[in-house]
Image 1: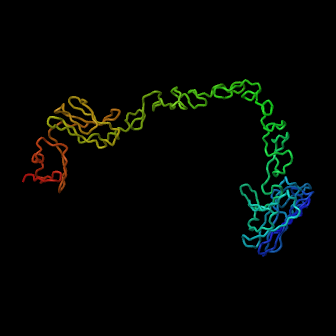
Image 2: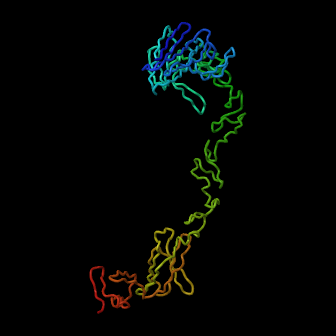
Image 3: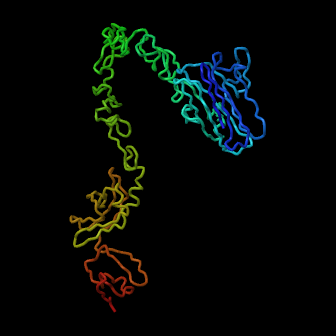
Length: 470
């Protein structure tokens, strides 16, 4: 049980008694209040240290004034203990807010013991409120007379980072006990605008001449609009002041509406970029071209990959600047064209070959075709892996792959012939054979004459069969 008793005339006193709800342990009490001759800080005899409780099971409660510890009163007495059972303060009007911090503990009682508190208030003036706070939640002590709290609410909270100790239970008295104070500033000229150092008062009870702002431009000149020009005229138009806020100055607004000249230290129109835009971000790049901003021209976009302005170097297919694919030429062409055959078919040269990574290798643009006599002469190029030469009827022909830099793979050459030698690996059982070219005499006896002892029959497209020889 926590009993609060107020004696309120010019002074008031509160007696608080804490008792566990089950009344298993002894109770404890404290006294707080105000008086005419009392002090807000530590004063020996007026403020009395907390006394030890008797018995083995009890609730302990005290006024906790950690900031008093080590201070001296007007008689030179040192505060040696932050815990008090009597704490008196000076009398204050409703404009001020007084606060008492309450702490405590229980001994030989279960954890989370329920503690009952109750109070009575006598002769409290209407302008002063009394609120009991448990954590952040406040209870109007004029509207209720009792409360049950958890014993843990009486414990203090120690911050090891700042070495400060705070409480969970507080009593506030004043005209703003439910809301807290507001910072006010003295208004010397009475125009509603203040200056100087702030004082904390309860809103609505602040002394005359104090306002909740410190925004006065000139607290010696009455000006309700607070619009005082440089000529010290309320609501004036600064007619005697240039754009640099100097009376009779020579500064002026330039093309970008920037105060320039005079004593500004700012030259007129220096905020115009090379594109003629005020505050634009365009700039002259390394190639002396106005770029970025609103120009649509990217900075240094006229440099090639080597950094040369208006140069022609570019990144090749190997990712190198101006490297002409030399660093990855073997990767591009691999081993070059394979299985190159130059076949004479009715007096026309038919060329076939196979580039294993083509056309998947996009860096290969096509193939160069040559005829080899005493020298190797270029004939034409193609993007296919088959080409017909009607203007030739014989000769040795060569093929190579090429890229965008006219780099070439090694030549693969073949002498044109009406006969094509094909080496086939035959397995036991049926074999599927595809011929890239056939002789003029396409009879089975002729085609298979060299292997007639190994082949016993032919299936044509899986539809018919013919026996070869006997």
